[in-house]
Image 1 (spheres, chains in turn cyan, purple):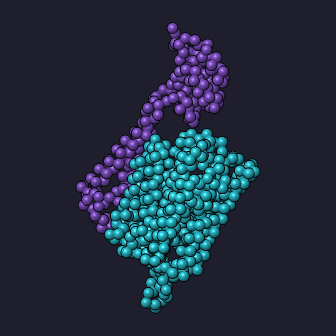
Image 2: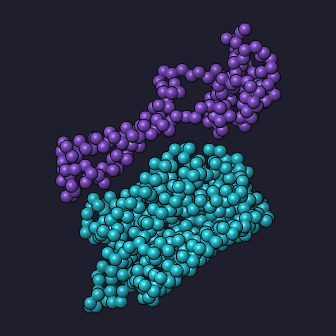
Image 3: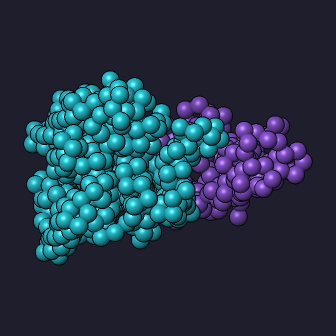
Length: 394
Length: 173
């Protein structure tokens, strides 16, 4: 059984304390800037948490054997989902209650003909972008994801106790339903929570863009927790071949993310239509974001392609940890750039509030995951593909 | 002393894999193994050197990337600059986003094709190339282990039988 040692506990507590101070500091000194900081950090970490569910479901529907020896790790990451769901729900409720001004389209009178703030384009989106439908959708996504997370975890624990393939096949069908649900809701959540900030603008590839980002940071998180547990002397069945496979996933999804980033950018750059380019002018023409915009894209692309391309690199733990940290930082910066230019315009900056909340949520995630890891034995048994996973070689 | 070549025929790849490990553990050198399909882990069991295919792929990709950049630079900037949707067309780097798909595709094209060709040439699979498999059944359902023996043939034969060879053929040098 895994137990949280004192060092890890103090570390996560310290991070959470920084986060709490940053939250209080942010909301006291500048609440207008603190809400977007809260939103993009929640978006970042809820992505990691829901990726845990996606990872488990993916292994089921693909009948994949390689990952079984480390499946407790994504399962534990799912445990962070309820907490971040509540935070996300809180932000969304606060938005429709007008406690914050993240979503421009929630502005009073913006959809009323004759009002001084009337905006015909936004009014045309009223059927989808209205407060009640918006909050109902958010509740549906969060309830659905949490339901599947709970169910998949329960099945995994039950399988260890009872064995047999019947439970496994229930897992397969649950996962298949989750895949269908997640395919639609991950895209819709990205439109609702992120894309609707820049209300006039839309991008049809946006759902994939967000999904690719969640996968890149999600696989990195799975890898980092796996390496941590291995260093602590657990998960002895995980060998360099499993680590290699995780490294391949990180490499692949970093490139997928870049591919989608560039697809979105190039079409808009080339067509040069005013209502489309506003999204990029808000990022490229503003001094605050100009550097970060290119920087985050380049480190998310260059770091994995240069440092993770060769086979040996994906089997080198130190290298993987280094690249993993770069990717997490790069995507965190990218999350910042998704939310801040549309909400704070030229006033956005990365300060103590942004970084502090990011660290605090990181501590919260680590604590929740480590806590979930103590609940069940880390070595699974009775999974039909367990033996295959133990003998993986690539 | 004459040099004999032994061919041990195996029916199953798992038996073959175990046999390769055991025979090599007994300091008998295996010259070659013929198999109708790639057997996972066989290269490691045989102690083969790691493939240098990845290095060639990287070189070919670099060739493709540079050729594409040169080509598009010559076409779109030097030779015949065109005004397409008001995009800057006098400098390469200003027009770069439009060229990236071409450079990407050429990189993939060169890497993939040249790698396949390298693979085929390296394995002697060009038109007119002759098969060097000593037994045609290795293209169907049998696995063949080729061992060159100097000296005690009987020992090696016994070893092959012990590790699960279903048939042993011999060829004098």
